[in-house]
Image 1 (cartoon, rainbow, N blue to C red):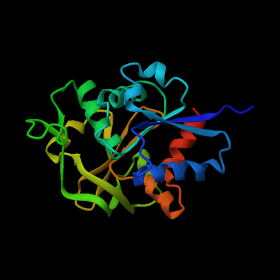
Image 2: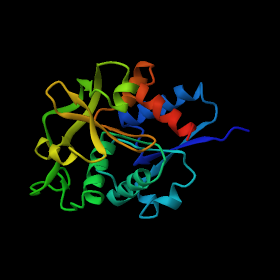
Image 3: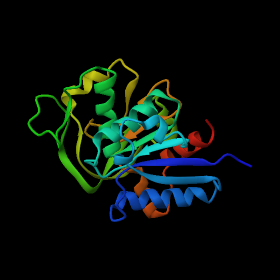
Image 4: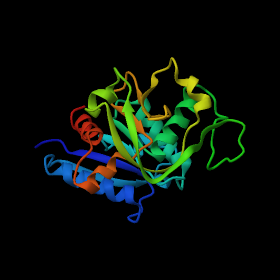
Length: 233
């Protein structure tokens, strides 16, 4: 019997959220070629600080959109667990924002970094309002050469869907110049749209929502790569 590939969808599931519809559809479509693929929606309040135990049965972790999360600590715990172990990880939209925060808090030891949505007026707005809001819109994304992201993306650039008003504050981009969390894609104006963790089997985060491709009956190559990595640790 083949080992089941079970994905934890960490967030606060809401079937009315378009991205959550896209995630469900992406996995259903991918499952046609992966009969052992299964997934669970894992609410952030169910994780607490015990992510290693709560997520032990999963072969991949996806921190999904629709933040702020009910339990920010639960989201951070899931992200840290994925970062510190070889469990494949995908973070989209809110998952991107919180993965950047978790890295800066835990690795760069800058706990004062804040999310501008939950801490407006913070003196260290690591995640800040975008220059132009990207709520229910599309924008061009360009892969950075010689990254894993570029190899998976399969195109120099693509139009991607968003539902987002916050991203990495360009003022703090220099924090990622030499560490393992590196910039993997930018938009047409040069702002960061994806990052990846070097040395990890699979750890990619995107401000855009690749799951929206499924609403056009296509499974995004980043999602397929994440699922493949989860199925073949």
